[in-house]
Length: 275
Ligand SMILES: [Fe+2]
Ligand SMILES: [Fe+2]
Image (cartoon, rainbow, N blue to C red; front, side):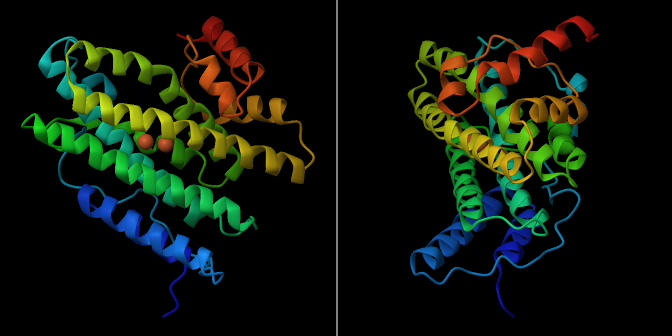
């Protein structure tokens, strides 16, 4: 059997255990990268990615309204926050492999696959870093309930690559850039050096993921002769079901190729119509 990148992506999506998923993701990413460096890239191929990725029996997945809230300043609150980050990172591994496996009918340059495979490998590292911190605190991924809605954006955009790029890297991962500095400050205040270190790695690397989103979104706008800003607004209004919440990290967003005129109009429109 010829191994293809899409088949490798599907294998990650079908792995339920978080640590196994992260390890497989890293080793398959390395295999893709070395095939590229050797000048003999693996075929992209095709796959049948599952509608939803395999998940472990724990954590229990709850509607966000039912996930218990804890005071962020307390030790239990900080554990809950790290657990939520671990859950986000696990979903992010799958999101990046899913974009590789799901849209193979659209011809994309090899650099597209390089970027998302690299992003998937980084998310795998983020998951390991954060679960390592949880374990150092005597907890683990699966010890607390987690958010059930994480795959919603992927399901909503399973037939629309540009919609996927608009909503996942350019809205959801960009949101990560907005909230991570406060999180780092919170763990600094608590003297949790290990958590601070992990979050700093995440913060630095997530800029790249947003940038990949913006890069390939603009690439496809060019291919189809679409106006990037108007197209982005249309797709986010169509597929994204929450408010874009200021304050925005304007500096890091700009660094990632996301100018204010992309996100501010959406926040203002939502602010007057939401709830
Ligand atoms: Fe991440
Ligand atoms: Fe990411």
